[in-house]
Amino acid sequence: MAESRLIESVGRALDILEMLDAEGELGITEIARKLGMEKSTVFRAINTLRARHYVRQDPDTQKYSNSYKLFEMGHNVARNTGLPKMAFRFLQNLARCSRGAVNLGVRDGDKAVYIDKIENDDTVKVCMKIGQSIPLYCTALGKALLSYLPEWEVKSILSQIKFHRYTETTICNIDDLLADLSEIRERGYSIDDEEHLPGIFCVGAPVFNAKGETIAALSVAAVVMPRLEPAQIVCLGEAVHRAAEDFTESIGGRRPAPAL
Image (cartoon, rainbow, N blue to C red; front, side, top):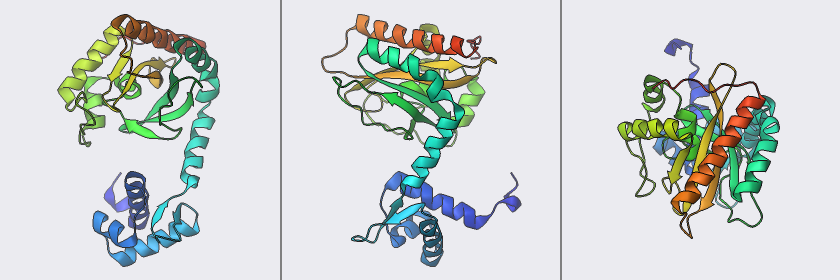
């Protein structure tokens, strides 16, 4: 879109919402400094966002944070796609057989977003919420969502991000990621071996529509203590792959030929 068609005030408001999403609670001065804006500009934008209930102000600290209105809007987007409803029985079956935390996610730009999840009462809870976004390059959901995209598209999606090393095993460059995506296509499922969260092992698999396009991914998260044996990893991976294949078939989808 041409720069002349953009509305600066709207862009500044969105910059503030994204900053609060990344940083949590901030004051006017902090927001202005981090975004390079005038304090008066931030004050006007914050007041507008607060009046429309997109941000809230802590009465004690006087700092601002995003409200639940954004979460509610995101949840409505997920609900309106129909994916959580269509996926529920496959998530439920996968939760039952895996005994892990089962997730459904979609790609939103350069991140993956959880749109549904099921956690068993007897498993350690994985602290990821519906509506939460996670990196594509170092999570099972994210890598599953990328795995059947052409190489040029993967590079384009991730061209503006800075690879962050969350743990010692985090993938931190595009070449290693592309090699991992090739292995995912051969295996049928992605692996996140403590790449994003210490102590958490995940496997994921993509879901396709009738055009062979990746529209979602399923994943299972488990704690790594006790350490999973290779046979257990294969068993878990195949279970997720099978669930994603069954879901794909149920919506008339098809797995495409690998594009990379």
